[in-house]
Amino acid sequence: MMQTLSEPPPDAPLSPAAERNTGPILEVLKAHLPAQGSVLEIAAGTGQHACAFARALPGLDWTPSDPDPEARASIAAWRGVSDAANLREPLALDVRERQSWPDRQWSAIVCINMVHISPWSATEALMEMAGRTLAPAGLLALYGPYREAETPLADSNAAFDESLKARDPAWGLRDRDDVIAEAKARGLAFTLRKALPANNLMLLFRRA
Image 1 (spheres, rainbow, N blue to C red):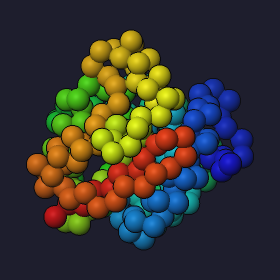
Image 2: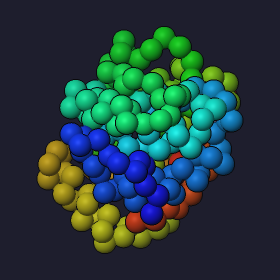
Image 3: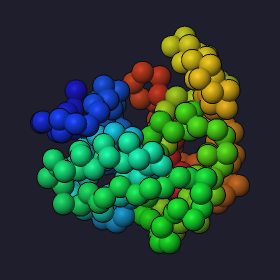
Image 4: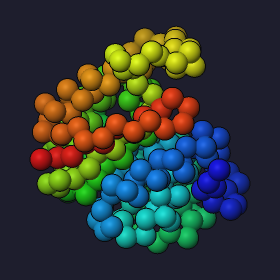
């Protein structure tokens, strides 16, 4: 298991899931992100991923974001104990509020475990803004569980889907092909599906 930091900040949440999936996600990012450039992380949560990825990818200027003030406080706490000089302060960015997006281009946008824990309108907005703000050939990387027509849904993912919908009927696992279609409509070409542990997927897209 890859550790994000040797000593987590005392007042910040520690996500066991982030500890487990950081390594597999990072291996995909290392293979497909540019050596240099700027990355926007959407819904960065605790900030563990941001710290680990910024440290491992020093040529990339990494900007985490989250609409939740508590999440941004956690990101700031993790950033405070990070030795990654390329890790920026968290942005108060809500994907559905277009005015909250910085007026700039990004080499890549990374979004981990948001698509299923948000209404579909959040995915639509993510694709729209990625199509607008990614540089030519820029990468959009999504991670999480998805439904796939050709693959039976794992029991654990089915139970997770039910629990999400019980919390909010607008949440739930999305159909991979619906996500791909939404991306295509915004000028983003689907380039990679990679299976990762615990029945999760990395889906990669490139702006034309």
